[in-house]
Length: 319
Image (cartoon, rainbow, N blue to C red):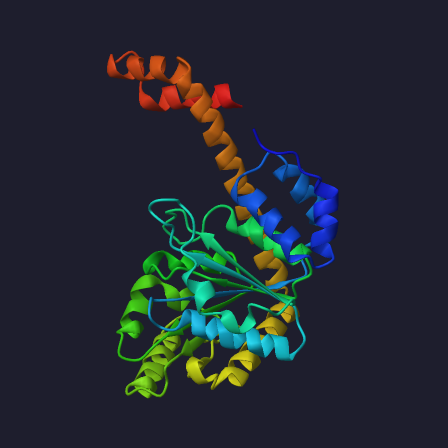
């Protein structure tokens, strides 16, 4: 049985900047606690202010090091920063492996930086259904910027674009990232492209490849956002002034034409859909434990009905 929660006190503490309260709220999200509805209702008036930046790219391109450098840049502006590092799930506990936290020790003691590793829980895109609600917690807790760093699982990474206001795609020379980006559909979802490890051979060629591929897309019309390609060396924090400038320009572009609100409305719609589907799936499980679905399945096997008619009956029962 779940422990009772004083939601109003917890939300008030989180709003005041208590890391412990923020951690507790995100834990309630991950555990799908019965108080979660009340939590989200209490947070709703305080959310919608944070700029959410998705950071994605193949394993080994330096996502955590780049995130570390970005945090330093935002903190230099005296902005409060939240980080959701979506780690692969442990096959034993289902929890996050916390690898990203190890590489972000520079900011571990900064009270204006909140770092949370979340388990992907086997979700293909690297983002579990709880991620949008964890973002809502950090937003309502007063974070000016929330960075979402994905696992780096290849072609399913495009999911982060549906979650972010600005999507930063990291690539590195010598990893075949140009071709991989085209295959994965990353060219369509990237708002800013960053070629990290630019001190290595092949960096300029990678930049040219990405720019060429972008030019082949449908972003050449006047008024459309044309993603910049920036070179960085994250381990030395080189090039991040240019990354910050590119992010600022993207925000200004979105605000000037209403794209920012469109993205946030679409994101809220996806969140509503995910919650509704999870609720229906839970009720479906209850129905299946009874005799309803099993009886319909037997009728399908016996040829007395077809799967579509049976599915319609299940939907009718759920609604």
